[in-house]
Length: 260
Image (cartoon, rainbow, N blue to C red):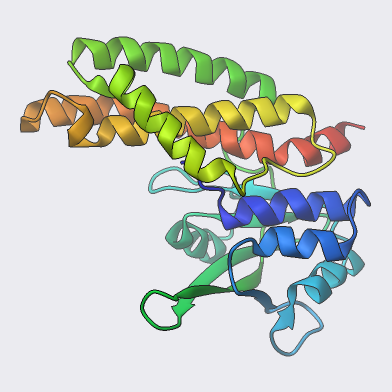
């Protein structure tokens, strides 16, 4: 959960680009990250795949003024607005980007190539029509922050009762090691995002990482099928809350601009 989704990078740095805060030559490498290349297919007015920088310029010419993140999961179309065809692709990928200002969405299709030990990822963003409607189940930053704090408190109490070490020193040590591996090359969001969005995203990632750790049998004393089911019952709503908060954080740029 500390790993930044590709759709999150596109949302954050695309918003900074559309707002004029960063130039294309800065935004594109940040979006690509550790991948080999990103291309975009299905853009209106383009017959084939195009490079990311050209695609961002084309989106702006089509009227796009911002991007929103979607992180859907089975039974929870978080951040999506339809139609069903786009929702299905986004659900399969576990992520998507929805444009503001044009009825378009993008879903990443990731492929790997290269010999063993030197594998690299290539990404093709599939651009498809979307329904212009409010995104599903996305809270405000304030709501997300309050929900995270409450969910975390309830989860820690419940996991402690279940004798799960996900709320204790072992989990904290694992979390710190997890964070240290990610921090070297990670930057949260992009220039221009409000500090509260960064704070909410940091908390959401921390909560998500603790959920991942608590799911692991090596960090929990309870191993019976009944105990594992009880653990899942506790953790599922916490994970859902963390995903909602992440979407709220990435979408804060657009929400703030829309309010203005």
